[in-house]
Amino acid sequence: MEPGKTEQAKVEHATVKEVGHGRYQLGRVIARESTGTVHEAHDSKANLAVTVKVLHPTFTRDATKIARFTREAQLLERIQHPNVARILDLGEDEGGVLYLAMESLQGRRLHDMLQAGPLPREYGLSIVRQVVEGVGAAHEQGVLHRGLTPDSVMVDTDPRDGSARVKLTDFGIAKLAEPGVAGGTVELITGKPEYMSPEQCQGKSADQRADLYACGCILYLTLTGRLPITGRNPVDVILAQCDKVPAPPTRIRPELPEVIDRICVKALAKRPEDRYQSAGELASDIRQAERGSSVSPVPSVDTRRVVAAGGGLRAQDPKWLLVSFALGVAAAALALRFVLDWGP
Image (cartoon, rainbow, N blue to C red):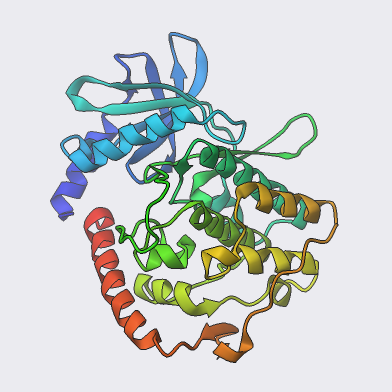
């Protein structure tokens, strides 16, 4: 985006103080998501606190962004679960400003909480389990999130016992699952590379197990303070997601129980068939870890096809040079799309 347009967008955005023909009075911005900004707000008709997401004014003529925004509302309407933000209203104001009213989202983004380092084990496990349960509710309705990150997670404290209460948000790039779609189908690469599954990074068709891979990334980060896969740029990260195996969490935080290693190894398996096959299965193992119990053993990494690489393991496949070339092309296209969509 050109500098002049950026400044114009900021001015336009600053003038949006209410939506819904005056019904929703917008307060402070609590998050900036893929298609707009999320505000604390007051519903003057119902006289209650709500959260309102407003499509950024610069997108009011962008058919793709408008479709993404309205699709999020339609998908959220399908999901009724305590750990998924509940939608209240969708409308269009004067000037074509689209808005989405949701229940009041209190607390902080998980991303902000993790800036100070990893969370205590029991507290972190509780948060991630609730994320997985919210994801499972979406999957039951045929909805794939596809963009899970700590920014998608709001965490509040239950005043009754001080426990964490989680709400899953930002379904902006979600889609309905398509049963029977061939695994080799090529799809547009979407999401943040650090949380994308290997099949997403390769532009292949992805199912619910890609969301579970993202949950594994969030679990790893929440308990260790580090992302399982990193790189110097999006291209590096995409390539690493396909062949680098992260170090066990206990190597980073030795005080963690070995059960955390087992869960992360299975959740972050490179092949979808080696991962958890459902959110319920992953949530069950996390609940076992919360109780201090063990979980079923997972197959060990095939050491015949890996070598040490940067604290983790890197697969050595004879086909990898060809695959990496193709991934490099796809990753370069992804990086360009990020610049076009999110550039200054």
